Image (tube, rainbow, N blue to C red; front, side, top):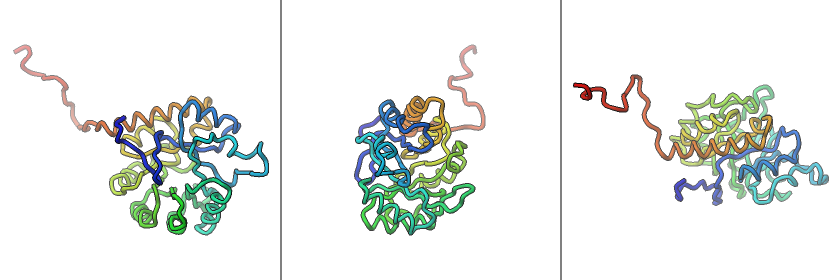
Length: 257
């Protein structure tokens, strides 16, 4: 990987472009194993899962100290609730990175883009490094830039579906038009889909369900890391053009004339 190819978010360099979460694992004890064997540097955790009164149940105790903690506002139904959760996260020692999730749709769990913009503007002014999770929409992404977001996290498909890059063309527009890192989040079910997102020029990929529900989550996390790295290398190398008709790689005439 070129030395100048760096992912910088909130002034911090992130070496591993695959991010994951902590939900749906059969046991929290597997989280340190995933980090150890994959080198993951960023993990998101729902603040509502943090139980400071119980060391055994406190998810934070299972996240290695070298990992960048990305608390999220899961459970927030509007901007006001997201802001409250973010402030609580910082007050409990989770740092100033925050992934904004505002969801009031209980069937498809789609984010409320407009409430997300409101929360982003408030929290960015308070010094948070804000990574908002949104449905891919160019106008919303531009509003997030103006609001002070540190990155934009468009969904590939609804949360937990493992359906892959259903919003591929909309994400491509964000990558082309938005200067902030575009981190594809939600719906990615296979390492090959993560690689495809990276080949498009995404800055990083976050997947949780695909790892947590695998038969071997540790091995799956490694597979995702390798796929994300391969996709990034392919993007930097420059993919060859596609054609509608065959194009021989060697001359077809002049050999037996």
